[in-house]
Image 1 (tube, rainbow, N blue to C red):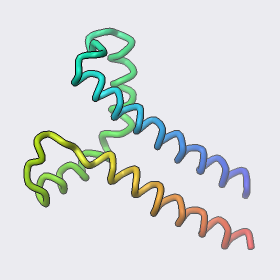
Image 2: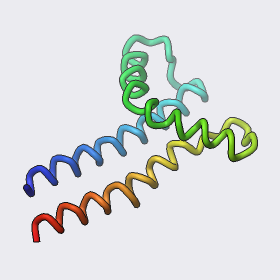
Image 3: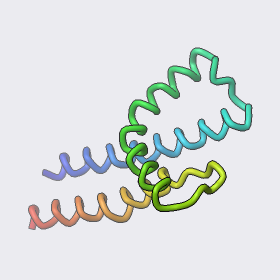
Image 4: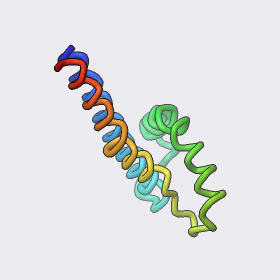
Length: 101
């Protein structure tokens, strides 16, 4: 049971770190530090996009309905990070520890 908990906790950590990498990569492309036409960069971005866009898109839709135009600033990664760190992970830990005890 503990090893399953550690596996899921590690997957959540990898998700958070890959989301941060996705955000940083998008900034590097916007500021023209990285060329998105490079094959390696394109493959990395396609992988990160496939992982994160299904989660970020519904939050973006809500964001654009509730908050007026913020000049292209996207809050969806912040919402996902806060949700994982302060809702999903604590709930998961409390469920696992209640099953153990």
